[in-house]
Structures are given as structure tokens and as C-alpha cells.
Image 1 (cartoon, rainbow, N blue to C red):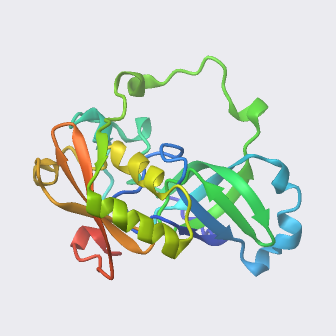
Image 2 (tube, rainbow, N blue to C red):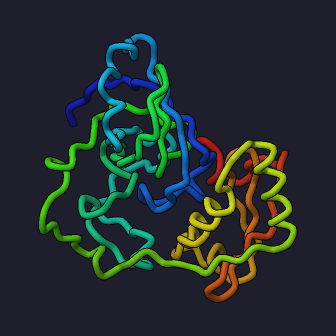
Length: 244
């Protein structure tokens, strides 16, 4: 394989603190926010000029938490519930070159910082490049969706325990966040569990993911996911939830 040396234009600061709970595609969770500060050596005062007129941007990212040790030509997208497709017919992060492509909503440009929404990337992701989304060029008329047309994302009905509602009110005040309940609902409604992990997918298991400064604990029974509580001061303790 030919090797290339690439540098990051900046490191993304995202509301998502780990892979578990992060949306599998952009715009599934419109309220997911992030900020990208462009490094001084890229002269943001000049290099960002004109970007504020675009509503969306492409982010080319580096999957820095990948743990794959070898190339696998077939992968198991979660929405296929165990079935496999070719790697290049998927958007799996486990690729020969671990690069990601995300379409993000550009909320505003503030000095050297891009404020973004609809994010599907975790905190600390290196961003290799930013490109404006140009509708006349980037939107393909008559595009086909391949196997994804017959495999919609799984969805769950979302409920909130009384403790969770109180915790959301406290977090909203503490973090000065709007739309926190909707954000949590959008995340949980996508069924973030791995369908190939039987222990993770069992009914009644108390699970959690990290967002902002708290851990959101939830439980799935049947087709309903219930947010139980938000815990602060906890640590990411599972091996698969730590940086390698």
C-alpha cells in the first residue's frame, strides 16, 4: 500500500464522548452539536473566508479509535441484523484507510471556529479537511440507495422515567443547553445497541453511554427504550468504551 502523510486542520469537540451512543450516520440526530477550531497554522482568518454563506459542510475525518488489526473484505452493518455486505458497499469505519466522510450543518462561523450540528463523530476526532456542500454538484438526481433501501434503521419508542426527567432539567440548567430531552430521545430512538451482541441486546439490561458531562443510563424492553437516569462523575469503565 502506498503511504501518505496527512495532517489535521483541527480536533473536533463533540457532545459524544464515546463510540457507543454516537449516531451511525450524520443527521439522524439533528441536535447533536460540535465545534471545530481551525489550527492557527492554517490561518483561519483567511482560509475560512466565504464559508459562512454555506448551510452545510463535508468533514473528512480520521477514525482515531479504530481497533481493527487486519483488513476484512466483508462487514456486518447494524441495520442488516447480522447479514454481511462488502466493505466498500458500507460506511463501516473499519477500512484500509480509516477515513470518514460526514455531512454536517454549519450553524455559524465564529472567528476560527465552526459550530456544527447533525454530527456523527465523537469528541477528539481529527478533522483532515472541510469542504462546502454545494447542492447543484453534491445532490445526485435519481440516486439509488442500494441495500439500504430495504434495510431501514431500527427504531424504538422512547420513554422517560421520573428520575430521568429531573436529571434532564438539572443538566439543562447546568450546561445551559436547549433541546436536551429531544437530543436524548433522538439518540435512543435509533436503537444504539449492536444487534450481533446478544448480551447487549437482551431485554432489561441497564446500559449507558456518555454525552456532554454525564452518563445516560437506559433499558430496553420489547420495542420501548426507557431513559432511567443521568449520572455525573462516572468513568468509562468498559474496555470497548476506552481509547485504545
